[in-house]
Amino acid sequence: MTRSSVPTVPAQNQPTTTAAHVPDGPQGVGLGPLQLRSFLALLLRDLTVLRRNVPEFALRTLLQPVLFSFVFAYLFPRIGQGLSSQANFADVLVPGLVAVTAVFCGVSTVSLPLAIEFGATREIEDRIMAPVPGWAIATEKIVFGAVQSLAAGLLVLPACVLTSATPVNVEVRDPALLVVVALLACWISGALGLVVGTVVEPKRMGLAFSTLIVPLTFFGCVYYPWQALTPLPWLKVAVLANPVVYLSEGLRAALTPSVPHMSTAAYLGAGTAFATAMTVLGLRLFQRRVRL
Amino acid sequence: MAERVEPSTAVSVSGLFKRYGPRTAVAGIDLDVGVGEAFALLGPNGAGKTTTVNVCTTRSLPSGGRVRVAGWDVASQGVRVRRDIGVVTQHNTLDRSCSVEQNLYLHCRLFGMGHRSARTRTVELLETFRLASRARVDPTRLSGGMVQRLQIARAIAHRPRVLFLDEPTTGLDPQSRLSLWEQIDLLRREGTSVLLTTHHMEEAERLCDRVAIMDHGRVLVCGTPDALKRECGVDTVVALTLADPSAVPAARLSALAHVRSVDTVEGGYRIGTTAGQAHVAQIVTAALDGTILHLSVTEPTLETVFITLTGRELRD
Image (tube, rainbow over all chains, first blue to last red; front, side):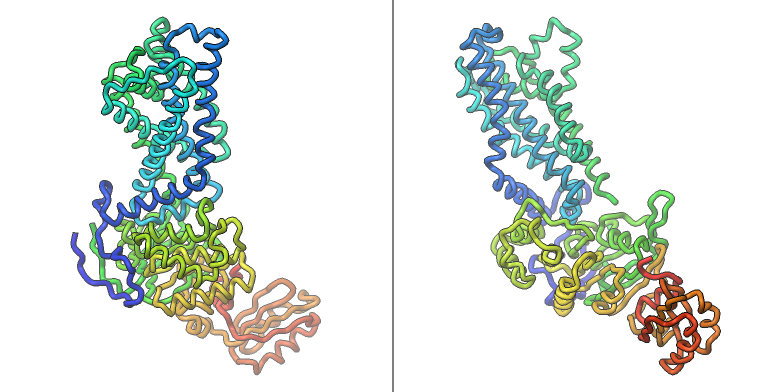
């Protein structure tokens, strides 16, 4: 891209950065170096806010899975309650809890602030004046959701392993697989958060969460492996619409491979397809929402 | 992609249309704001001022026509336009999750500054806009005037070429308004081009080199405040408040020599004349039947221009 001329503006009004003199990245794809700096600054803003709220973040992330882990993998075996009869129940439960916690952390930390920025405070009107294309602002939300989702997973995994009374047989045979599954979980969380935050009004967020969390958790193969649904073929097929299934199964394959799980191609393929679909949908909805 | 055109104008609007479904918000306007100039879009609510600003700031795509800001085309070079402009919208869009200084610092980073220059610029802006003592508090704890100062400080933090201010002083007390006007004067002296919208004629007169009066999506007139006042054909405005306006028919006033316009306002009339103060006495005599409670004789204002053009008051 070439510039036809030098702008005639007063010298004292020249930007201190060379901002105006570097071309945009290609329209639609990719970011130029200056736009990348702006993109990183958007991330820096979200991380600054996160840093102000670390205790809140830890509490919100840890409370539910640790209590689950405590009741199901510590209390039940001690008092001889049903599920404990299954020898490796903790191996089934822990990857499932990590998956579902990571997803909900990513979704909630993206969607709730985004819905408020769109609605009550209209902060979005300033955010979209950033010198990057609209899709990059939406993508930053996905990336930030992914970062939080990863942080949640890293917090929850040791917490659950430690709370469990029966030992959790964590066995990472393939570290690369663990990384890929973790990245997939992060991506899905961020993309789903963008969709929810763009579509749902702040006042309906409570309703959206309660109607979303319960089915996604209970039918997300969190407390049972997918294979265990064989006696109920209709349910075994129906739960495939739930992305948490692929993450629970993927984390089982990566962390506790002794538990039966889906084939690698199945959970990675379906998970990637879901993440891609949510990303495309989220970016479109965001662009439509911000355009006046 | 369209290339940049040498910007002899900060903002160049030609044949701009903006439609929302069947409704036309802007019906073909042309405007040029020179580099370093302060320009006001003056008009009542719904005139199309904010829509025009939204198109200029890339928030909204034009339905027709062409807009260039700082030499860039708003429709195809949005990112480059945004890099060169600062925007203060009608709403408080400050980041409530960050402190006052973080709002400024993060904005600087967003526009490509490194850590150190962003810090320096933040300190400088906190001083200039008299916000240093509130640097660490959240924006939710600022007064209306401070919120607006911070919004302007943030908008100019990256030294934009063109600053857009949409109703910058609406809802502010007179003291905060004056203080904000001083800040805007300061920016102008530094060479920033300013396009502001307002329905406050005094603001337009006080701050701007030129004014475009808008109504129903069109520009009615455009020029310097003095030229507009000269061209409206009235040099003296007599405002009468009467105990009984019905006792003085408007036709009686219109029939007087040198009277150009008679507008009925609450409790009386506003009369535009062309003979200076020489004929005020004849107006007073003609209005005595209605018992005069209050009389004022002033020079025309932009409000007079607007009334002459539309027959309505700005705040209708």
